[in-house]
Image 1 (tube, rainbow, N blue to C red):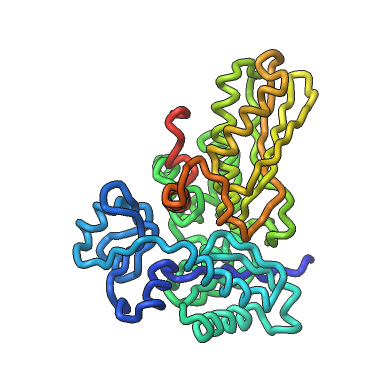
Image 2: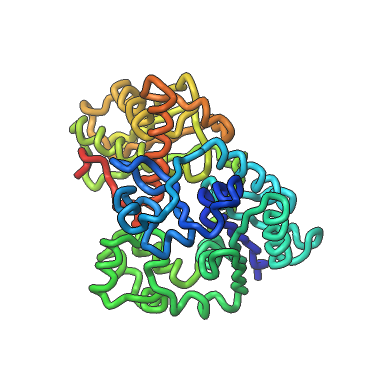
Length: 388
């Protein structure tokens, strides 16, 4: 029998507001809300004091001001948050090289091979939390479990400043009573479909046959079935191990319409950019894969002037590459887009569609807000207008 993995998910508590309090202790205990301007801005993050008033990430700033008029409203200081994030990441890497950042404020650690040197996974998690607090001044919540999926859910159970441990033999006991709304990707529409099937908890989901879930929810139904039982074989992927990130789409019927292919490329570009931002990576080389009806496959690549993680830029380059293939002339059964040649420290160099730094910062805040919506409500919660 294979040895159970020891995975830790670490998640900074209300990261942006906590950094603001760290820099200005007079804000401690106050409802701090970080985000864009009042007119069209959205909340990037809110302190736990502000959350009691119903303020949460991706909420329109105007609504946040209405819910919490006594709130302290501050602009996003991304450079400062990244600086603190790098310091926290260095603490993580003292215990294992297997660190996979999910975003600026959370990461997975695989400490399976570190226990002989640093103690048990639970001891490592406790030491990391203590060191982050004493060296940086911030609290962090942790989940310890045999898989990434369970560890991530566990870290959210006792927030803020909590530690939740799920041993291999207690995974089902831990998951069974939880609401399916805690599962990644279960947004408003998926939750509605599950309720129609009388599925409210992880246990309910685990008891439904896979073929039934696939008929109602597609391939996502199969993934959800196994996750509901804690089955997650994904490995922790350190940044330097990730060579490329991408998505592809196989069509039920071959496509000759170039416009339809471009619409699919737009969706794939956005998904690819979102995954890159989730891992804190920027890429420089765009690659397009096209498989024709006769299964002949071609790839086309282009290298950008600078690193980026912006969906529209990937899409624009992918469309140029598509015109260098026989798409539109020969039926296409699959398209895919990927990014490579990564750099995790060069987001400041990001290629921009805009002419000044202010507009580029607005674009970055937009990315953060949209990514928050996707995490909270699932991948289909926001789509480009041309795809509606």
